[in-house]
Amino acid sequence: MRVHNFSAGPAQLPLPVLEQAASELTDWRGSGMSVLEDSHRAKNFAACAADAEATLRAVAGVPDNYRVLFLSGGATGQFSAIPFNLTAAGGRAAYLNTGQWSAKAIEEARRQHVEVEVLADEAASSYTTTPAPGSYTVPAEAAYLHYTPNETIGGVEFPDVPEAGDVPLVADFSSSYLSRPLDVRRYGVIYGGCQKNLGPAGLAVLIVREDLLDRARPDVPAIWDWKVMAATDSMLNTPPTFSIYLLGLILHWIQDTGGLVAMGERNEAKAARLYAAIDGSDFYANPVEPRSRSRMNVPFTLADPALDADFLVGAHEAGLTNLKGHRSVGGMRASIYNAMSDEGVNALIDYMADFERTRA
Ligand SMILES: *Cc1c(COP(=O)(O)O)cnc(C)c1O
Image (tube, rainbow, N blue to C red; front, side, top):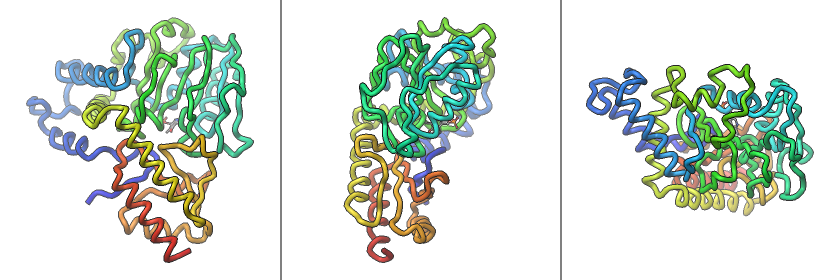
């Protein structure tokens, strides 16, 4: 039996993808072995990695002057790689701080000797807002502007793309990757860990405009050097082959289910139903300003926190798992990424209504 898994990450994967991976595990492409056991230089894996990249380019509309890199170390690895690749030590970079993930990216940039300018800091609202367009100015000398389109913990999402002028825009898309159409040309660098919307933990996918590959510090470790990784087709060392294979299956699933337009519409509808259920009740509440509510991570509280534990036990019995909120926020959090079905969201809404009727 499969549960409806609301985990924030690693997160639920599409069933057809898991079934295909299972069916191919002992004999992949007629090779008599699994993808886990084959050389990354062998023709089967080379074709698999090339197909994952081609499918990503088709699904996301990645222009020819952007490179796609498959990197280890998750999004956190890129928190360090970004300053190394885009600024000299002592250089300046601008960041928007909208939650715990942007704060971590800022902290790491400072560790890498970047002079960080925080142009907007939403800590004052306890991270329930995003900065309004036009409320900050990006200094022309900044090496880049970094922001987090979706804050996984606070459940805060930018409704718009920040305007950075000629300064390269760098976006940590970990928790909203390929959840709706995007215009890659507006960005210098798009990156994210895969374990929320695109599959396995540990793998990061980075999309970088080619002209930005010439800005790295001379002492950047080779494994973090985007130019080196681009020159070696992300195979400077043994890449996480199984993760890249699984990413490819997920990208095909996105393509086969209608691509990003259909995905965006489904995600919008799922989130709208859940927020309507929260707003329509006096028992549940969500603290985020309406324009910045996340379509991916929906935190909510119960009017009486003493009922939290019972809510979670009952949810588990109903096949609804991993709803406990992040320890820093409390309450509940429903992560409803690409792979969360309509049935899953509807089952949660029904359970919430039942719980309110019988326990509130
Ligand atoms: C999960 C997450 C990260 C961290 O990803 P790792 O792969 O664990 O390094 C970074 N940023 C955001 C927005 C996230 O949701």
